[in-house]
Length: 523
Image (cartoon, rainbow, N blue to C red; front, side, top):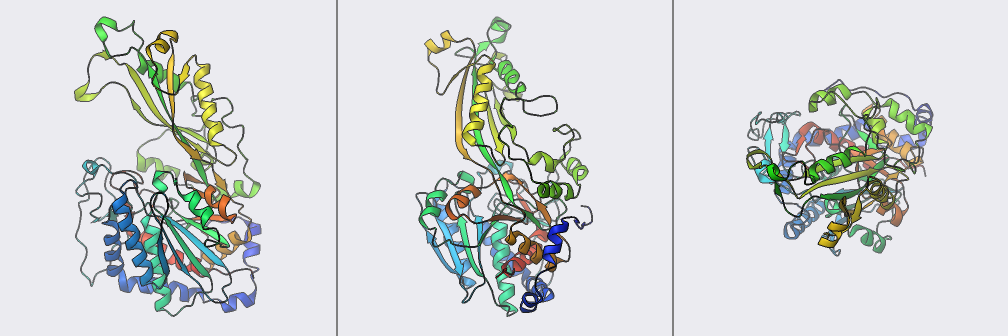
């Protein structure tokens, strides 16, 4: 990893940050006190922090596992109560929400923090040397396609954890890490005798990885309880430099599955090849028609509703340090899509991605047939201005323009005989829109000040994070600015087998949240 770099620019923001009043600065704990509170506590309690985290990670958290999801919720409630947080498990039509609060008499502002405690499904057979919910340590990143470095035992109590070691378990990065970092940060502030100046509220969701189906009604029902000045969305990977990463928006998402049909049963390729329609070939051609050679989507209307970046947002994208060479080397590819765009520029646009393809059999199961169907799973990542339903319709219209008759269910014999090109398109999920808040809001400037004063260098600011989060639901229900905080390593195998967390990212995350908890208001 490259040496940490300072990010300059944002001239107007810097002037505003350094114009904070002397009176406010005098009332705030000195930055060295905040740093020492978080860091000294962590240094003295690394093994206790790690033990508590391993206990949390040992509880299976797949969204569909209702029994263990509730065990997670009860354990998290207990973690909060240990820190003096007034906590409760609150019911929804699906998985419960864990809510907690620290209310301070005469508080200057109220900060609301979101984390989700559920995780993606697991395939234990793909996890190397461990099971998804049996946390282990490795002295570094697991090499792609291999099983090195091998797991190592927890060091003795008198030795510290190496910052470049990694914890492997489902949910360790996505998204239990911010929760553990926040709890340890509160411990550090309390041990140092540093008082809170802000009300702090927590909302932990148990269905984010399943589409946040019940979050919207919950937020609408409990708007008064969740009143705050700002919501911090604590999720996603930090930038590749490892510096504290603040994001002001996320992409939305919608998903579609396409199935193209051939004969009503697989046929012998010798007897029927070159004559019976091959759905694998047809689907390949159909998908290829959706992008040009640079990777730009050529579906009519795909980019028409995009809200352009502001000048400030464009400046922020240009100010992000260049790590693209490292990224390509790390993931083993040299050519990129986008016609020369940087990764950060590409993330600011909607994307069309093929998640998976299925037709016939391959490998040891390969057989000489004309398959009866071919299917593709597609996700469309959205940016501000893109409506999920509109984007899905653009794709459906494109399929029709390629000569396909589109159905929404399994076609019967009459339909098959009436249409030579037949495609079934199912919406995997309705999806949700993107969100982007202004980088010029007062709370954004105060957050920048808190982190800059605390760390003595500028965090990375991203107008939009690449992933998707249900921010739009909070925007609709609460109408407050939403800003994201990312602390985990970028190469954490999010949503994949062998998910991991670099220990140094957890330690720095503790310090990040200590600073955010104590950020000043403008009152």
